[in-house]
Image 1 (cartoon, rainbow, N blue to C red):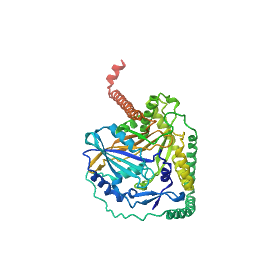
Image 2: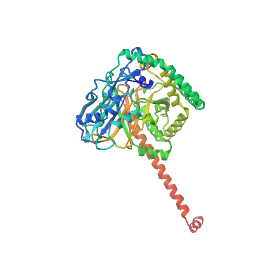
Image 3: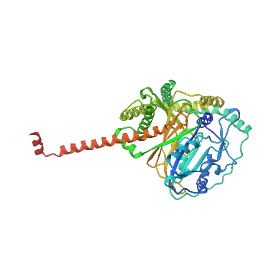
Image 4: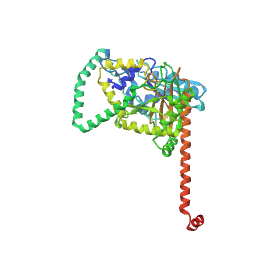
Length: 487
């Protein structure tokens, strides 16, 4: 039995039948598709390495404590690995629609909270693996660790892991309540121990306190509601999904020639996509404040391979009001530099820790209330997760594309997830089915934004080469040539 941390539990409390809290991905593989039984075997080989895959959630009576993970004695792998197909030849649009439908269905809380769908019938004899994992199990970084573990890093399938799993006896409700009460009694002692540890390093504690205070002051802007636009408001239970793609090398060329970081270039491209959508909806970009939540990983290197959530967040107003793409990139770079110095991420982590010290019943009730209220303090979410840098394989077939899915929170009708893989970048755009039928505009705008910035970068590089050539010619002129020119 393993108790959830406060952030893990919050994703369960936020889910309400409309707000779905699972993350996901759509991975496209070269063909031919494997037999269903062969793909089940791919997962079976790695099950001992991922205990969460065979555990389900149990809630503690009357919320005396946070939910716990317990072994599922009735675990059936074939329930979680499912088989589907598109009408041959399945197009990219067919795959987008299927992804949207699958992500509109919540995971069964009576079973381990994950599913994998094998999808045959894609054009060019390709096939897809659609993955859905509840956010209470993993964040984006842990999700990448998970898929990297399940798949192989060589074409030859890895040997099965020795599996001696014997499910532990499931605790009764009385035992869950008793364990929660023990944890409650232990909590003050643990907090006192944390205080003593902090007092042993007063300078570091003081510096961290100052950082958190600075971050909390920066968070004050969130108290102001953003102007109402068609991009935010109530949502329904159904989802749309589409994607855009780019090459990481192109983004690096842009970064090198025009300045900023890879993340700055990506955010500038996302800004272009949203600006195009605002214009397509006949709204005025100058009158729109598009505040986005950007998750920030606080996972330490030693915590890779641990399946939970370790993220904070910063909030950033995408500069959709700027018409010039270079101005947008400059604005993104400037604001991201400021945010890195604002310590918002440290403040968010501290707020999460504070919430974890509150009574669980109070926290759960507050989060469930939040899930039913359409908030007006942010308009979208943009999350960027570094993925595998090498090719991955399933049953000897190489994964060609790796495209992410991000859930929508209350009041957020469109979200964007970015995931790198083997030199490529995949942008997964999630939209509410009824209020965001035009998310393809965002996808097209992202790709166009990358192309425009790349053209500007190449032009600047070419101009620099011309200037260098001119400088070299001037330096190599002979004195006689100089006299002729002077005469």
